Amino acid sequence: MGEINIMDLVELWTIQLILFCQWMVCASADTHWTYTGSTSQAQWPEVFPHCGGTEQSPINVETSQVQHDPSLTPVQPLGYNQPGNNPFTLTNNGHTVEMSLPVWMGVGGLPWHFTAAQLHLHWGSSEVNGVARTGGSEHTINGHCSAAELHIVHYNSDVYPNISTARTERNGLAVLGVLIETGDETNSAFANIFNYLGRIRYKGQRVSIPAFDVGSLLPNDLGRFFRYNGSLTTPPCYQSVLWTVFSEKVKVSHAQLRKLETVLFSNEKEGLDSVPLRDNHREPQALNGRLVLASFTADSLTIYSVGEVCAMAIGTVCGCLGLALIVRVIVKTIRSTSSWDVLPTVRSTSSPRAKETNQEKKEDVVFKTTSDSEKEEVPPHSEP
Ligand SMILES: *[C@@H]1O[C@H](CO)[C@@H](O)[C@H](O)[C@H]1NC(C)=O
Ligand SMILES: *[C@@H]1O[C@H](CO)[C@@H](O)[C@H](O)[C@H]1NC(C)=O
Image 1 (tube, rainbow, N blue to C red):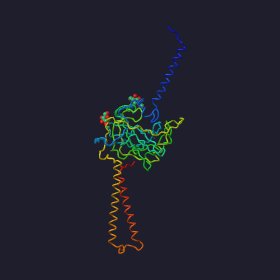
Image 2 (image 1 turned 90 degrees about the vertical axis):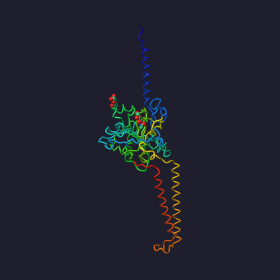
Image 3 (image 1 turned 135 degrees about the horizontal axis):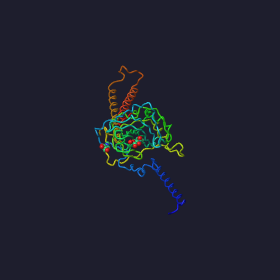
Image 4 (image 1 turned 45 degrees about the vertical axis):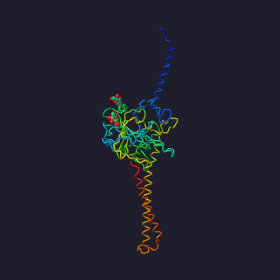
């Protein structure tokens, strides 16, 4: 029998301690991920294998490739307009701003009942330097990136007891995606969230906010959307999400977007470096043959190309100019056949020249109104 050597034991313990520490470091590195830098999107699959899967989100929705499915019924928010008496909790988790949702909220119009869990946002850095406009939405439509995107996350409560078990399974989650763009008016629904961002500037901070009608964050038209099978857009990227991306966008003001893009940090308050929390959006992922369904017809999907818009604008201008010319010719013809002097309404102070100027102004007004109203019909409009 060998005698117990104290030095051997110490050595063994030391080795075990080192291994344990290494494991700890690796474990914590495992859960750390970012959108840029050494732990950025391209590296996610190395640590989170699901992120390298074939049914990942977000995607670019190419409207000419989607398939109309008339059986898709409008999304029904359930209990969204019953905020209840308890406040909501708003959290900066270092990756996004997240708001808890009460269990009585849910979504209908899907093959199962889904219970609401939380909502959060993704955004860019378009307004930070006031120069580059990169956009910050995750889903893109025909390659167009919107300013930001709201995700309302629900789990399949018909099949699973809680979100922890649902989030790893196919059809376990249903997420509503709302594309956000900027406009001139302050969006009072989003103000319910944005007004409190200053209280959760750092990772780990949370604040109770007055409960409000969550349905007010949604676009008006819940009947027009894209539907596909995808994943969480953040690690661990489980391919468990039945996605609904609404066609209609909502608008927040430029100031509101700027606030979202500049107020938050992804580090803790005690952190040495301040890392602004922005550009927290994943690149569109490959479709890999997946079908994207649309609840509405291809006709109403027509989105005019830049060339078509130019052609329409030029056509409108030419048409109006032509009309103005005809009106002028007619006016001149009338003038040359009738003398102003014999008209009883003509006052001595107003010369024919002044009349002509007035007439031209009127033509201008007519011309402007026509072209403006026609221009407005070109892009599909949306109100929050
Ligand atoms: C979720 O449900 C599973 C299965 O019933 C259970 O083991 C787990 O503890 C639950 N998790 C939470 C967070 O409630
Ligand atoms: C999603 O996948 C399920 C199978 O799990 C399939 O029945 C359903 O049609 C798919 N939905 C879409 C929108 O492709």
